[in-house]
Length: 146
Image (cartoon, rainbow, N blue to C red; front, side, top):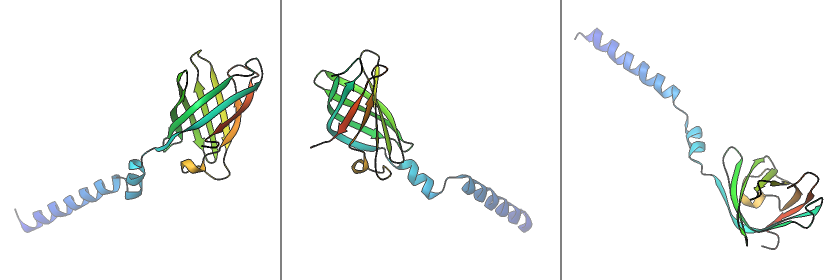
């Protein structure tokens, strides 16, 4: 191959390599993709319905959950009667928890932190509860005294 042909091959290879490099995510994107979910260890939790048709209903146990990078919450409330699946979301300083009861009904807890939630210490420690039936309202607390 002549010298000019080699130059074209080298330049073409460099252009292809640069194009591939530009399509790859940068270090910040890769670091974020590797960031594990935030896992909050089991702590005492209670939710009490204070008014409505399910007045006096309480969920009491130890709540452990994870918060995915996008804000999705998944976890479990371990009660004396068994495990209750928990889903929800985090957005800014707001936390929403949904407790999926065996009856097929759901109880929801909402709380607001004074700061954006970036770690378990920044979680709200209390909030309002609704459900499992229409008109049921109450309150919840997480790691109170724990």
